[in-house]
Amino acid sequence: MYLIWIFVLLPLAGALVAWLIPDNRRRPLVLPVIAVLHLALTVTLLLQTPPPSPDRWIFLDPLGKLSLICNSVLFFICANYAVGYLKLRRKRPNRVLCVSLLVCLSAMTLVAVSQHLGLLWIALEMTTITMAPLIYFNRNARSIEATWKYLLICSVGIAIALLGLFFLAYSTIVAKQEVTLLLGTLIDTAADLHAGWRHAAFIFLLVGFGSKMGLAPLHTWKPDAYGEAPGLVGALLAGGLVNCALLALLRVYQVAVASTEAVLFQEVLLGMGLVSMAFAAVFMARQSDFKRMLAYSSVEHVGIIAVALGLGKGALFGALLHMLNNAFTKGVLFLSCGNIHRAYNSKSTQFVRGALRRTPWSGALFLAAFLAITGSPPFGPFVSEFTIVSSAFVQQNYWTGALFLLFLAMIFIGMASTVIPVVLGKVPDDLERTPYRDTAPTVWPPLVLMALVLMLGLWLPESLQELLHQAAGLLEGGR
Image (cartoon, rainbow, N blue to C red; front, side, top):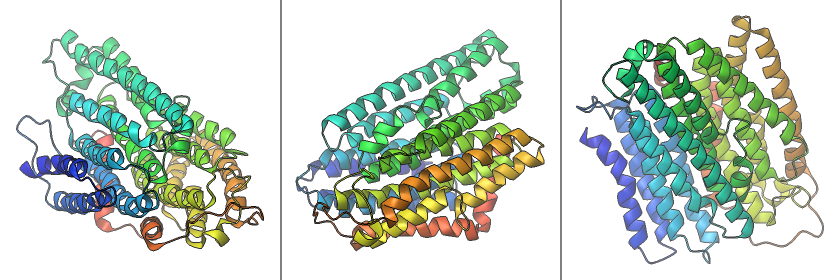
């Protein structure tokens, strides 16, 4: 058990070291060092998982393992990218950014290992707070507006989730049971909890964690936050923070499946998922800011996962696989579009054209990641999306399957209308001269992620398949 606490505290120790280093140039080197150690500990814990803590508050189950894989791999990539990125921005102080990144990693790790819903809520709130200074890194009027909107909406959402936890705890009191928020105990006694308070708890928890995930219509913080944050922060928001909120929702899903309200909970998720995909399809069309476009892509993909959770059965495997695929593909998109933004000093499609000529590696990665995220073969998202939509038709839920395919087609067309001119268009003659060009430190991290996305489309390791099946079994009501 001591290994898990080292796991959680390691990034905090790194944050302290980063804070104490006075040199703006050497401080970012702490990030990849901690990232390598964290990834090594992740592999160790996956191979040799320790038993639950004596009080059962801490345990790394299959769902936590999947979240941990996403967060550890993505942070490793972003930490290495940050060294090259911050070298280009030496005039900007990076102490707060480095410290906040490491504290956020600690909080995301705690989310993955928490088996007590109160502790999970605290860790999730830590991720909200530590992400705020990262969004504000550019320190201009638009970034402070984005930070304020992010804090306001996510804090309201997390406060609503806290009320949901209070209602869930109170339902145990009314049912004359031991008051607890331990996940295992709640699953065992879910059917005996007071129906009214349990029902209210599920609604509040779904709204609260749904706003943190960015499910429509609770997504309004995303376009500004993703649009104004640096690329590496956007990658962690879309691939790390969203997955932490998703894990919290999956914990509630486990309790709902064990109760008598599983069908209602799934129907609400199915509806919210389809609404999220519809919102993304509408707002992604003719999007002039390609970083804001990625925010609506994130809304789409949390919607896809929600649809899969609503379908249940075989779609659960696809939902969990899509969690991995979406995290890694979003990492490629945000890091490569960050490079393009740096090269053009603009996010507007009016000025950004011909990225394949100006930044060949970043342009090619952005184009490949666009094809992947829209479900094109042979990339990973195609496999997970195909698993979900085929499950809808197998269950004879034809309307859901048809709407799912319709929204995917609309989103592909809308996203292509932005990405293709950015990548393949003609470089403007009056383009502002900027010093940025593709270099190894800013190219190899997204390139490695792109290779992972391709691998997940062509070959799923047997150990990963087994882990996905185990995690899906937990969502189906297993222990």
